[in-house]
Length: 280
Image (cartoon, rainbow, N blue to C red; front, side, top):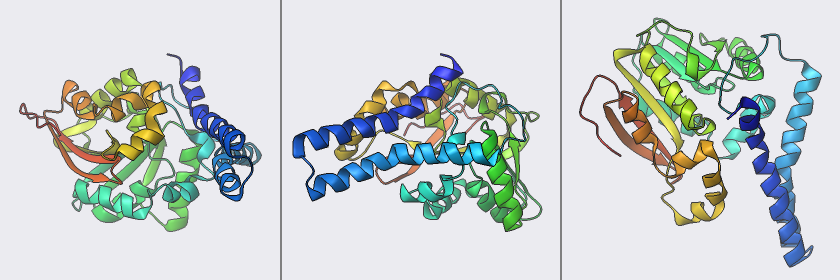
């Protein structure tokens, strides 16, 4: 599947929102409850258009063309990412819970793949102190631009590079910890496989991969909302609970689920160098 066809999947959310809004209007008419629901639904395409216009006006692409990736990039969302992510329940509390499972130690070398605007990378840099190193990579130039600006404004030691998870530009056995927060569901199956192989290569033999991402919903109500995502190659495997299988196929012998978030996301800690896998 080409990168262009993958990128086009991001339009499924506003398309579905517009479709559901039309159904609500046709079935309920414009009562106050239905009008409120329609307004909320139409905010999705509105935010998408606004983010795109902000990027075009800012000209924030000094880093050159993005690296080749089969994943869905989110550069269009860079101007609004830090505003809307907490609205989804994925704010600082979610980031701190991710780092709790990572159990970072002073002086460790940490990589975040798909770092977005760099919030988690900056928090990781604080946790490991001046003797450690925290690097964030993202395949979207606009995200890296915003991440660097935010880090400079905050006086953070975190650094950011333009790169894709499938071809990480680091030597073998560089990092103690790799973080992947809400990014694996942006990768189709073949990119998940390539990305996890790349992550394992840059991890030290005693290193650990910490994943926070979509999993098989624990609440049936989530299925009612999210069943269309089973038709998307990026998210289908997540919702079927296949992340541990992806990890074990790509050299991670120990895989442990260590918690859940909103009954929809899960936290996994995976280690290479063990032949005994622990399913979730």
